[in-house]
Image 1 (cartoon, rainbow, N blue to C red):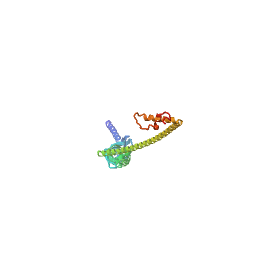
Image 2 (image 1 turned 180 degrees about the vertical axis):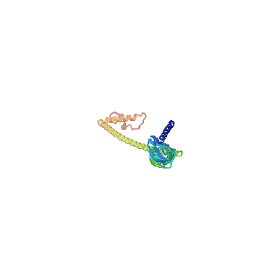
Image 3 (image 1 turned 90 degrees about the vertical axis):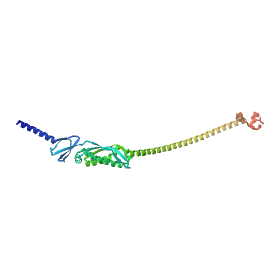
Image 4 (image 1 turned 135 degrees about the vertical axis):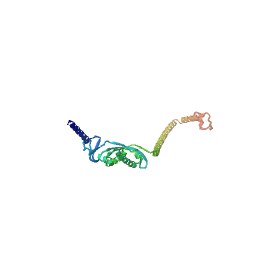
Length: 294
């Protein structure tokens, strides 16, 4: 009797343990769950905590709802002007509708990745196809990915029950056959700009030089005018002095002018002049008195 009772107790405890282990389940804080009955969803979006299910007939599928990263392969896209670019990108995605996610992927993360990747590729292809190469290079990459992220997020929520949190471009390269042509065009553009700047500089230099020459001519003309004015004033003052001196003693002034003429004439040392000895030039050499030459 004791052995039978012990067996019953052990059996009862085992049954309770089995029932508890198959009836109770825990959903982690990073997860969401759905409850299934023979494969059909009977409870959606089960929140974190301790929950109960019916053993055997009901099962629970949990899904990681943290933000996941899909690192896509580098792809070749054509720009608006049909130039090829090699784009390396990645996608941040998250399960937001566990029921829809389960129905679309059976809870298989790899299947979800295989469904998301071609959608991302198509979205990026469309986005790069509406921009030219200059816009792709010059625009901020965050702004470049805004439209594809919003469009793809809306689509993926409906189809897979996942949200596209972000699409980021890690790198944009040019194929080898395009790089040389692009660099050549960039070099030509820079050379054209350099020629324009040199021409503008030359034009500015000519303008400055012309202004300087014009100002120089004005200053020279003003200086010449001033010098002529001063020379005229000096000559007038000298003439006035000579006139005053002449009026004070005309004979002495004549004598002084003759002496100055002698100095100027005989200062050369070897000069020869042919003059009439009786000319008025030699008057003061014959006699120092005014009447000596007569």
